[in-house]
Image 1: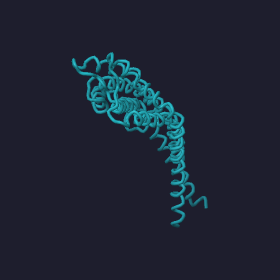
Image 2: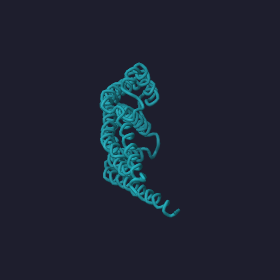
Image 3: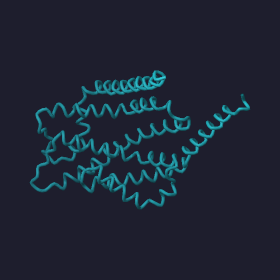
Length: 264
């Protein structure tokens, strides 16, 4: 009996190992394809700042190994971002057998749209937020202060903003899931709009560097995405809970028919 109980666990662990290896291999393959262009990738990421630096100013490296390791670190991060669709597919392939049919129909579009929204958040940060923020920062520097940003500190700064905007752009997905499971309804969320607006600025304060400019540039898109999620959520209100109840009812009916003494 114990052997039979351990077999499913072992098979799940083998499947998990397979999926993890696939994730690692996909990231490594992308990294090997990009590592030759590591310096070019860093130049692309640093272009918004370099473009707005005062004449004669440049970025610096305060650590001896930073000119080598910083572009490599960025390339690893970029490899993970590029491999995100493959990574999400491996996660999907691992959990899909445990989901109901109606859950599988919903999860695949959500994974796809979640990936697109994450990339959209990063693109918004790069093309909209960075130029505005760096223009503001460089023009407000006190007189006599030489702007010379360390390349490693700059990478940490932009990666924090990339992650903040990528995660915050998942707001519509979260709202759809909450309404789909029946945890909340669009009507309730509409009544909470003032609190949501304040909450977006609080989240912006927590996820972005400590300046009002970046917080506002994150809070406004988050609230707009809340409204978008609210619009689409009305098509999914309570569907997940109703589908589970129907599934449980069908299972109960089938079990009752199996146990009915008239059938024996």
